[in-house]
Length: 180
Image (cartoon, rainbow, N blue to C red):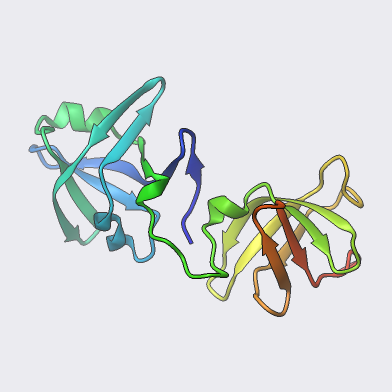
């Protein structure tokens, strides 16, 4: 799954880190799994404030501290330094199609969560990666059963019964009073 989505139908896939050296190389924090998959995408769009710039990675290498990249046309370390902290996004159409039953995190955010008893538990506010399985963080909304935040494991066919993107609903096998 891929992390956070950005506006304009773009998906954030990385964040620019500190500069490395004097020729415009930059450390890159990739949100893809594995991190090297970031090089399968492009062009990238940086967004800092109101400005958006299209960027192309022209060189990359593995380094002891992670990934290092060089953007085409950015050879000045001061320009590279100004990019520190900038998120890099791609158009959502650049993402590969997933098999049926698989979703990007951004597709699940904001979906209503209803249990098999028909109780509205809230909506997905974020997702957590735990190593064993992903976890839905379900926060209350105005129409939910109560004001509780719930952590629901994203386990297909045991906890997650159905994901209906068109209806905006995830049906879960999860009692409202579970862990009370």
